[in-house]
Amino acid sequence: MSRHSLRLRLGLAAAALIALALLLAGIGLTVILDRVLDTRTADGLDRTAKLIAGRVSLAPDGSPTLSREPPDPRFATPYGGLYWQVEAGSHVLRSRSLWDKSLKLGSLDLSRADAAGTVDTTGPDGGRLIAVVQPLTIGPSGGETELRVIVAEDRRNLAASRTTFLRLLVPALVALFVVLTLAMALFVRRALAPFRVLQADLLAVHAGTRTRLPEHFPDEVRPLVADLNRLLDAQERALIRARDAAADMAHGLKTPLAVLDALARRTEPADPTLSAEIAEQARAMGGQVERALARARIAASGDLRRRSCRVAPVAERLVATMRRLPEGGSLDWVVSVPETLAYPGEEGELMEVLGNLLDNARKWAHRRVRITGAAEPGRQTLALDDDGPGMSTAAIAGIGRGQRWDETRPGTGFGIAIARDVAEAAGAQLVFGRSELGGLRAELTWPGG
Image 1 (cartoon, one colour):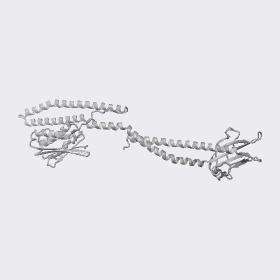
Image 2 (cartoon, one colour; image 1 turned 180 degrees about the horizontal axis):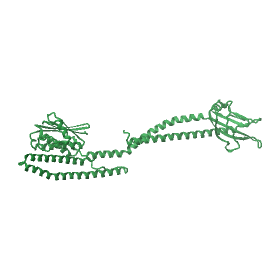
Image 3 (tube, helix red, strand yellow; image 1 turned 135 degrees about the vertical axis):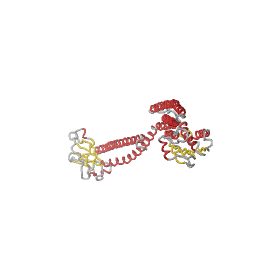
């Protein structure tokens, strides 16, 4: 797929946006998880703090005591990750998990409403803790003692839960990215389907099987289709005008050329040399006009609507015509062309190409003219061989320059040059060489098959 492909660009852009969206979603889910873990942990610690607060009492010396410790075994394991501490002035009662350390929360004003809450602190082993502080007042009226109950949990426990969550989240997001990217690729392919249909319809117009583009396209593509159809109509009108102009020019030049030919014959008794020169120049002018008109027809027909035609029927008709011309009836004409062989142009163009080549073969062949065709994968070939004297390399090169090379035979001598012009305009290649019959081989090739 080309880097200029719209499908590739849309696919890459969609994949990048999907990846960005999933990355942001992953970050957002992680933040939400952290908040949920903090909230749930704080709720659990708050319940434990209230449980401990309900079991606190004061000894005669004012130190806090606990009738029964919480049942969680982590409170009894040194540095177990879960800690409680009860403070009553300078007296501190703490869980065995703190060992010989204390929770340092700094100075909190217990008279304030925000004294109870969630704070972060440092644990006995240096780890970060999330702690809940619960203020408590006990004792008879007028002799109350203010205490605070602190319950804390190591954040490494929360980090482990977060890591487990990420281990599940990352593969899930990767799988979701793959699924969404494939879905987007199918969506892009589906969205660009009208352009593939349009390309197929344009190929049909090129091949000549369709004259206009259908209008059963989505609203977004229909204006483009309408513009292309207007372009096809305009080119059709230009083609008709060019053909009419070429016909008018040909008709208008017939009379002057006929007058020059008549003057040449009239002056022949008095000055044969001048008469021959005038006749020669008139024939040269006729050939040049014929070639110019052929080029005009080719240019006019070189629009989007290329036609195609089968070669075999055209070859049979032209050979039948050649047999009725002088020197044609005595020749052995062999036609071996597959019925599937199709020329990439209109039937009139093929008749002009093949007609000129066959007429040249008729003039120069001794006994035999052969027409063969072949349709190979990606390439189609039409070859014409005769057993005449053939052409020299210099003569073949002169065809491309529009030179008249067959001075000894009737005609203008521009037929082969016209055939090459028409063939090249249709996308075919006409090459000449030595035939295995001994004469000239004209091979016409074009893509297809």
